[in-house]
Length: 295
Image (cartoon, rainbow, N blue to C red; front, side, top):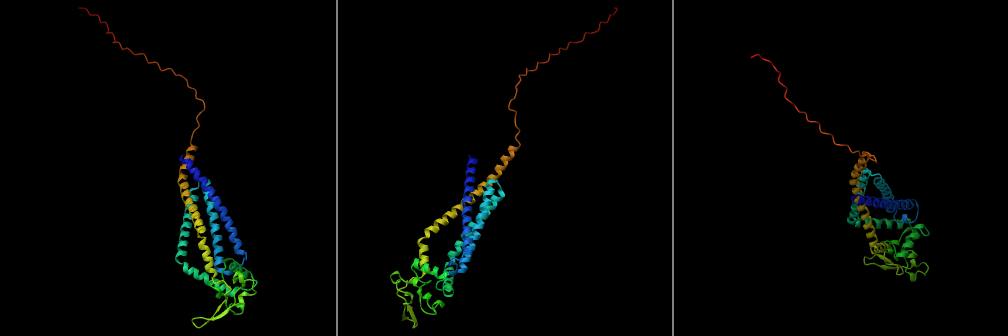
């Protein structure tokens, strides 16, 4: 019964590694495509995007190698491969936990860096009728937002010749039919005595907050993905250790099978009569010699 349970674990372990290996191959292809393809999203935050694609490619390669190691170690009953698989998966699990703790502790710093990079990219690289402008227009239209934090992020960028203008994609749908609605701004005096420019036809909310709210509403998807990943890794850790421990038993059984001597199929049984007891030896006293005497 114990041997059958180990065999079931072995089959499930192999199937799981094959599925994870296929998913890793798909992730590798996606990462390479995103790395070499100019989709326009790259220019929004080139540093963060390249780091993300490089991380996807590296993680996919590690996943493929680990799955191959697990499959070969399980099929060949190789304890060395199974132990290496256990160590690598455990290291990945701890690294993911540490990475999550890092993002949790330094989330404010990471958020500020991403926000700064986005503002810098829109001021330097944004040009009308370019790929990046199409990406920004799509984001602002779909998420109903404008700029990174507010519409004022678009003011005085080189694309507008230093004017307080916003793209037409920032305009609210009912005002979007107006030609060049992004030019309709009002100059107001702020509380600090500096002029402020307000466009009542533009979305007041920034896209950074809009995307963050969207991610928060769909946080259950990330939670489910994290739970599935943790379950797969824990199952791999437990299964590899079970197969590693059962490897010595399997090798001992194989060694015992090699020294078994085949017995003949037919054995002739012959009745052997019991041995006769030896005849008893009777010892008689010797006769005395007759001596004649003259009296």
